[in-house]
Image (tube, rainbow, N blue to C red):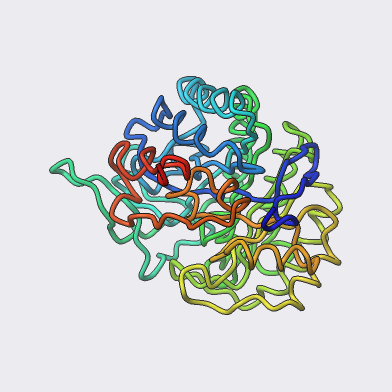
Length: 369
């Protein structure tokens, strides 16, 4: 069998995975009403042979949104919709985690309830960043973000409560795990980064203070799910959406220690060069993270099967997450097992639309028939 290490079983927290091929979270913008339906059931069920599916980023509240046509997890209707997805994945023998998302300042007034300003740690606009809005003529597309307002200190418990409520709803829907999205320059990373957090309260200034919100969110989610069913996505050194940080190494060092103490299932690192920009992570960084964090380490960013195999064989990580390959190859695990050629995805159908470019990519047996 090709890539026997990548395709070997792995224990992640409370879950037993049949392989180390993780489906990365992929925003596909195909839920106009924010409620997953039969199309999403088919899409995720097709990919159930993954060791673990991590769902597309899912809004924890109406104010968490920055992109139209993305799903939520705050209402009963959304819970029911996601339950249909989870049940479809489980029927195919798969496992699925829900990624909990708050975009913070990567939003626009038109996406926010009542046309209000987005919220952020500080009233600093994300320079050069776009969100995804619906225009007056009914079309949708990218648009520069709005200037946010700074969250008051006494508002932060409500943000944490939104994450807790979202975790409760994920549990009601039957998800196997949840992943706290603290990466890619969204709200939690905005609090962690020096360039977007200019606060002078207990959530700003030092590394400990800037990490406070994300750790309080993790604690709240762990209370609901149990630490063995909680993961977190981080993106140290990333340079997107105008994010700037003077102390990324100090922050990841502190977080790794704190998250290890909490016994969460995994840390999922989105590598900083995934957009073609930013530095590459060194092997020394990976070894350091391995020493600091006792749980499972998942890496994501331009991985091929050979590169993932080498990562795991060299004990630099435990699993690899694949994004674009999973768009066009629903049977990615089977293709790796046979060392088969991969189908290339069509970028024109990444976002929005219906089944085209979403559920109509053929499996290997269909492609070769």
